[in-house]
Amino acid sequence: MSAGGIRSFRRMENSPLASILSIVFIDLIGFGMIIPILPLYAQRFQASEWQIGILLASYSFMQFLASPVLGWFSDRYGRKPVLLCSLIGSATGYILMAGAISLAMLFLARILAGVAGASVGTASAYIADITAPENRSKRMGLIGAAFGIGFVLGPAIGGILSQWSVIAPFWFAAVLSILNAVLMWIMLPEPERHAARERGPVNLRQIFEQAGGWRLGVVTAIYFIAIAGFAVVTVIYPQVSHRRFGLNQSQISYIFVMVGLIGAGIQGGGIGRLVQRFGDVNLAIAGFAIMCVSMMMMPLARSVPLFLLFTAGLAVGNSLSQPTVNAIASKSASAALQGRVMGVVQSAGSLGRVFGPVLAGFLLTGDHTRPNIQYGNTPFLVGGVVIAIAFGLATTLRRSTPAKAVTASPVEADKN
Image 1 (cartoon, rainbow, N blue to C red):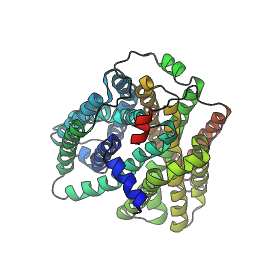
Image 2: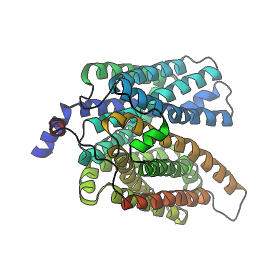
Image 3: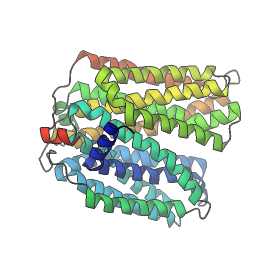
Image 4: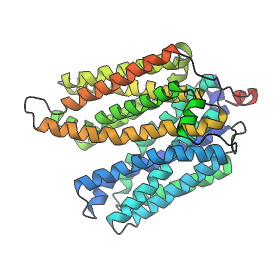
């Protein structure tokens, strides 16, 4: 590592940024440990396939409902209390999962975990509080990098722990959340700049009016559409890659590790320099274009290397678009509205994670009944069309500038 890189790392290490990123990272490891084992765990309670599908979707649906509410609470009462309660809620959810004695109890635990997991918008608002506007995409990208690495390490740790006991990953995730809460309580200060405890609009229409009007509406729609389109492909990816190329579970896991590492590399390092050169909007548009082309080309892949190439393109496009869309939304909001605005955007993304898998399952089922269509082609093509809509909407953002510019104080800008 260069001397400049070491200095940058030390600055981050001693700043609230390192604390908030460690919280997101540890939380995502816990979440990633649970995802691969939850369907099999639910079968212990005689859950049918459709019940397992609803169980998995309930997490994102509760995030959809809770994200704006937690955002409002974080604006009104502070970021730190909301993050602390969310971590405690996550730990409680994991403990309930480990001790579940019925499917109803497992659903209750999953719903609680979904509400607690809706704090990503609050974490994004925290980063916006301590970051100057020109650095927002870079900082939002670090959250994406934490997601990517967490999803790589989480399933691996969960797989190892599940060899001892099927409930061991739940208990380990609960302990991680509790330790995370202690770490946050000790190390994470409340942002000085954030106008917490200031009364502001509760009505959704008023929030949009005060934070960019139609522009924020377009950004929110883009985020929903992009997340849904990405979910269409990622949900069907294991089945399609197994059926087309005979890849086993271990090989498919390695591909997801590749996707996570690409995301971590771009969002954790290169996104800042790219934004400085091309701007948030142009980079988001480019990301959607790469995603759209990659999805549309996947039906043409007749070999594993070509399929992996298009998969890498999908990962690159997603890594370019997600942090920049979040940064565009953040820059339109004042400090008093950051929690609500980021909560609304993350809520739209959570709804996309519900809608995308449902659409994917419907389309994949349809491919079974059409023998002249290769298995998985329809979801890939429809996913590409969905991302093309996001691309088209993103181009409209070039026509105007944000309604208001939000700047950080010189002291905070120096800290970052």
